[in-house]
Amino acid sequence: MHVTHDAPLAPLTTLGLGGPAATLVELTDPGDFTEFVAFVEAGAERGRPPVSLGAGSNALVHDDGCSAPVLRMATHGIRRRDRSGEERVLLEVQAGHSLSDLVATTVGEGLTGMEMLTGIPGTVGATPIQNVGAYGQEVSDTLVAVRAWDWQARRRVTIPAAACGLGHRTSRFKGTRRWTVLSLVFALRRSALSAPIGYRQVAAELDVDLGARVPLAEAARAVHAVRRGKGMLLECAHPGERSVGSVFLSPAISPARATELRARNAPVNSFPDGSTRVSASWLIREAGFGPGRPVAPGVRVSSLHYTLVAEEPVGSATAAGFAAAVEIVRRRVHRHTGVQLTAEIDYLGDWEQHSAGKEASLPFSDASHDGSVTLRIKG
Ligand SMILES: Cc1cc2nc3c(=O)[nH]c(=O)nc-3n(C[C@H](O)[C@H](O)[C@H](O)COP(=O)(O)OP(=O)(O)OC[C@H]3O[C@@H](n4cnc5c(N)ncnc54)[C@H](O)[C@@H]3O)c2cc1C
Image: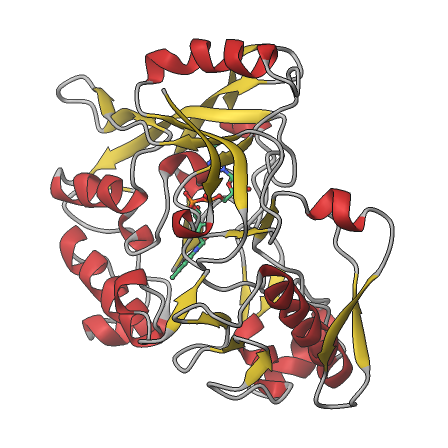
């Protein structure tokens, strides 16, 4: 367990924004977690739950940083629990393990269930928080249980997947610091072939029909190629852009709105939780945010994908500016399309105490109506 004070958090996030952690603890050995609990309970904050941080690929840290202790999960390791001959293989994976490495391991070992998650940045411990998913697969497809520390009950708990409230990019863990995820148990199936290809772009990349099953490694390669084309891989982000992925959820819409938007050629898809959703990227484009368009100082629409990015080197961009840009896009999309966008990113740090219950005026104007915008942040 490694403790530092006044530790910059920006370099620990993919956006590169935000202030320092008053106390940052990095945990590499799962066996040190008990010591960490004692450290938190003996600290000035007396048991106030820490902020858990993985690879910072879905996080916007406040410019003033984080006064609560920040725990960076850097534990690694996969423990296999399988019996020869059985089709199902159980894997227990430490929270700090890289998701990309886990996916590569499962594909390499001939296990299906995660091959479409290739190229998603971040740690395994963060995956249940928003039920990470892409191209037809979600963590909920393979998750068996979450092992966590419950800061409210002050004990280790094992939460079965069915009790995790996993939905479309959400779970009971989203928006609360009650649990620190320690490890996850997944069940995968032995198979040389992938799950059925459910996305047109992936099918086109493979030159197969929708619903086809292909060798695992080919499916992963095709998803990787599609993501590369959209700039949705960290390693191929456009030079000068720092990304936090989609920023917005694809919003759920009513059947009537789905019919109306389909008639306008909007990508409208059905999801495993029963919801029908329209692509957030399409809505952003419809609202007139073209590639590269500046939205707030140092924050613009990506040149590769309809999402917000911070300009690099980070100079004029601030976390407050990024949050303001999120609000500008949200309001304009609503005005132009009637659909409400919700942010997918997690606001970490002192947002709550700076904005609790009040609206903060921000020094940016929405170019569409020249008025200053206000921001309400829930923390
Ligand atoms: C280029 C790019 C592409 C992306 N593509 C996708 C995609 O296709 N699908 C998708 O679902 N997401 C995508 N994302 C978002 C992101 O990769 C995922 O949300 C990922 O799970 C975040 O992992 P992380 O370790 O970086 O979490 P962080 O950003 O560090 O944290 C995210 C949240 O999880 C919490 N958290 C982290 N670790 C723990 C823990 N051990 N215990 C409790 N809480 C924890 C944090 O407090 C925070 O609320 C993308 C992001 C980028 C930058």
